Length: 149
Image (cartoon, rainbow, N blue to C red; front, side, top):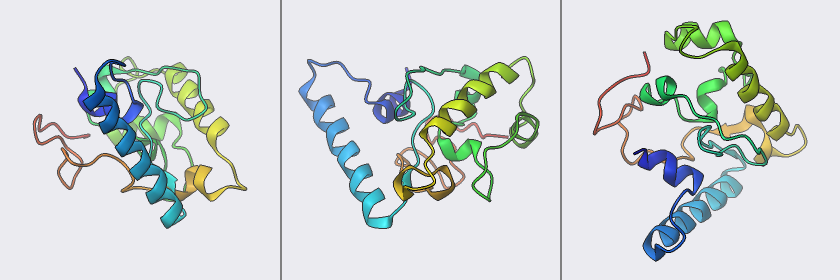
């Protein structure tokens, strides 16, 4: 149902060689791009995409607004957006995304973050190290033109 998230999270059927090859090549590209640029991969938040995190986050409202990546939760200074700021930025109602959901994602991002490793720093995210093939410049889907606002 969500091919971008499936590809980002590596969620493919094990017996599908083409899908496994595709995700393997994409993961390799992300790793190599991050190392060459000395940036953190802009990983997908949903479907178990936060590296080193056991949580499997999902929120249809945010996904439908194309809020998919770690960078969507980070401000221009590399800090995690507060719950209120996040809701205002993306025009999200409190009933659609709760403080508890935000807290779980925030904690997962903080567990991932390392001040000593450029490749694991949320303040060093390479905004273009993600899947943007099916997105326009403003990161809305070409197949489903719904924006984040």
